[in-house]
Image (tube, rainbow, N blue to C red; front, side, top):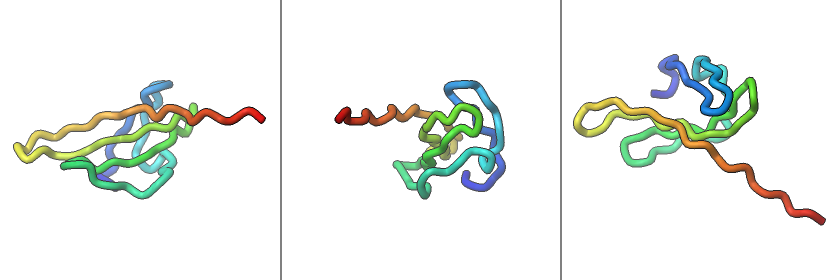
Length: 75
């Protein structure tokens, strides 16, 4: 959950740190039973969504999804 001091691992470089060490890029939102946070790694800068929640059955689940960088238009 947000603010519980859980450890998060960067999917790119493997950096492990507490939630507060990662830069939060937007306010958390709910997706089904997950709380989703968009975070940036302090070491490599990769942006990813961190999903964390407890299912209706009581099983705790967490995972990350990488965010593809937006393509920039060449002028």
